[in-house]
View (cartoon, rainbow, N blue to C red):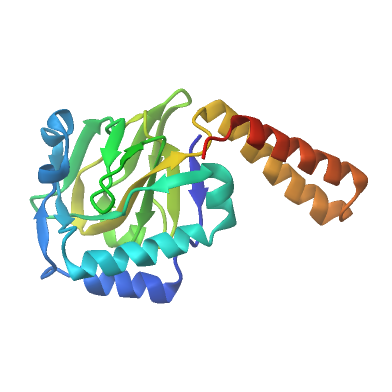
Length: 228
């Protein structure tokens, strides 16, 4: 499932992120954090994860996504890897086709995380750069994503994806991975659809015996499928 999450960040949070991601920030070659296959495709800059600015921005992004009800409903997060931050522009301007690693180690806890869901949070306005689309190849075909600053997109970590070359300006973004409580993507989609339609029914009808019963169905399915 590919899902657009609008307004994950407030304007003040976007401004704070951009202030920390200036040209003089502690940028490193992005290939240093990639696996063997991805490293040959990765030509961007990445903020040093050991820097104070990275730690502050990680907290900002994690607070933002965890207060978003749609993010929780779609991802059902069990673990979230600390966010990364990247920069595309000039000579470091693309990330070719690749698949994210299946398991990743949290540098803070040293625990392994299974990458079920990938998330990109856009930090530059789309009119500020040319190119730089997040191109995702899945069963629905190829989808190209270029969102407003502060918006996010969730997509399967198992998909082949790339960031097309930035030919003008600079593209700033954050990205991270989620291990979901519900491992199966089809089950997560059923739960998300049920949750979203329950919200619509409550808006239209209020709380009724039927919505209460369907809420029970949702939670019983989640109880059956979730691993915590």
